[in-house]
Amino acid sequence: MKIGQAAEKSGLPAKTIRYYESIGLFKGGRDDNGYRNYKDEDISQMHFLQRSRQLGFTLEECKDLLALYQDPHRASSSVKSVAETRLQLIDQHIEHLLQMKTVLSGLVKQCPGDQGADCIILEELSK
Image (cartoon, rainbow, N blue to C red; front, side, top):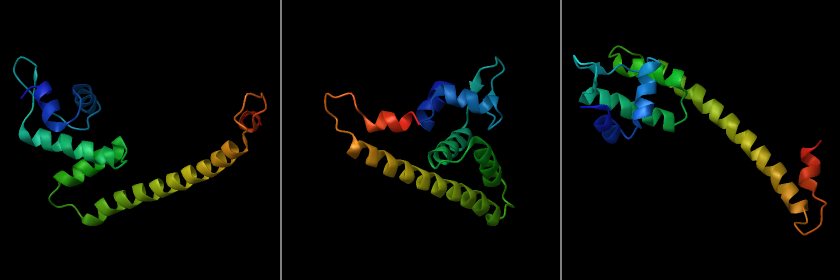
């Protein structure tokens, strides 16, 4: 199938598919005339990459996970290690977002939000 059909089936934009190919994340087939031609296994890989990205994995992690997915002799401990590392980073990011929310919520509560020029939010941002 052509790239438009692959994009429709996989849920990935054609531009993303081309990009993933250009960085070597996966390799689709080509016809004799040079046009991309995708098979069902390519669509499966695209789904895999899309889901991996939705879960926050980086492109490099996606590449590692895809290689593990394709390796029938993989050790699940290798997959778990990649996922645990990503989970730790997500937890750190959540903690940072919660801290940001706390600070910003406090500033919003202190801002009078009226027609006056005084605003604690701008004062704090300028520090």
